[in-house]
Amino acid sequence: MYGLSLRDALRADPFFTPLRAFTLMVFVLLYIPCIATLAMARRELNSWVWAAGMAAMNLGVAYVTAGAVFWGGRLLGLN
Image (cartoon, rainbow, N blue to C red; front, top):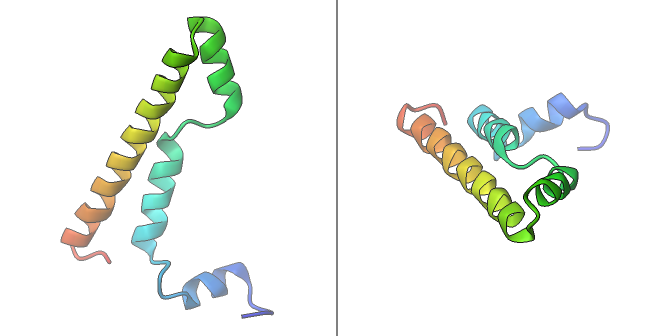
């Protein structure tokens, strides 16, 4: 696997399919981006509880949406 470009290494990997790549992109698009966002939410809301709830909600939405994209793609035969 040494000496291969990233594109060739990903194409050679049987686990990393285009559907899984798209699912990963959907998840990364929706999850909470960084700790600075949580810090600003805590500052604006005056509570770590609300900031943690916001982070949990974002992660939950990202997880459920990515799962729906993955299983929907599998049902359509895109695996």
